[in-house]
Length: 150
Image (cartoon, rainbow, N blue to C red):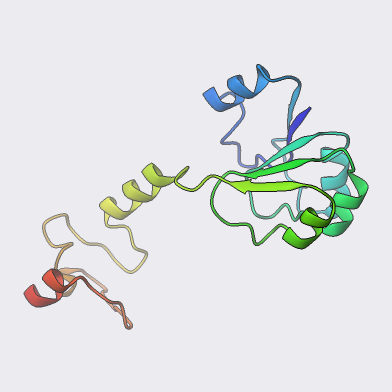
């Protein structure tokens, strides 16, 4: 069984990835809060052999691995593994993998929108930090071509 214990807010349920996972066998997706509680995470993972970790608030600790001995794979939907006790996983024979680039389009869209959380930049002015409203670079390093034109 494959379990997605932490799909809140939901980004997995009903997607093409979810449909492909169903072809591999039983899939359980939990689309409500609660995976941040260790006991609840253990309940959700249960007898699953694989877990797809969507959100970093689900912490895969040694206690989780101990309580879920059938678990053999934790796949992180992203790059970070700081919410997984990698040493405990290795000691208990659990493979942990990540999916770098899974959110590349979202990151690109965010970057191209100019939404840096520091103010707003129009597309024509985004290459020049001084033309953006509420700009406060606080030590930001700019590419040479941008720094030269500022």
